[in-house]
Length: 185
Image (tube, rainbow, N blue to C red; front, side, top):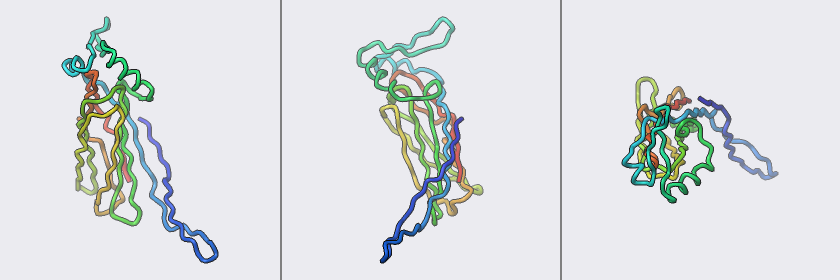
C-alpha cells in the first residue's frame, strides 16, 4: 500500500488599489491511498470474444494471451502505462471542501488492458452515518477515475473506502478486484 499526504493549496487573490495580493483560503490536507488490484480469475468467454485465449502454465497458474492482431495491439498500447499489482492499481483520495460541510473524493484505477465494464462503489462514513456511491460503468481504455462532492454534515472525521467486491472485467478476460483503498479527512 502506498500512502501520500500533501497540501493542495487553493488561493483566491484580491488586488487592492496598490496592487496588494491577499490569500483568502486554503484547502485542507489531502489523503490518498493506492493499493494493487488483484487478479481473481479469467472469464474465458470474454477473453475469446476479444481475441484472447486463456492458457494454463506448467505451474498451474493461468494467463491470458492475445491471439489476434487487434488483441495484441490493445495490449501494446496499454503497456505504455505503469501499473502495480497483478492487474494494476486502484486509489482513493479525499479532502475537505473548505468552509463547508462537504468532502471531496476521487477514486481511480489503472489496469493492464482496456475494460469491458467495472462494478465500483465508494462508501463514506462519519459517526455511524453512511453515504454510498455506485460508480459502475464502462467500457474504459484501462485507466478510469471520477470525483464526487458529498455533504456529510461535517467535513471532519469522514472515512472513505472503495467497497469490497469492487472490480473491473478486462477485455482479456481478467477479473481484477480492488484491494479496498481507504482514506479520510
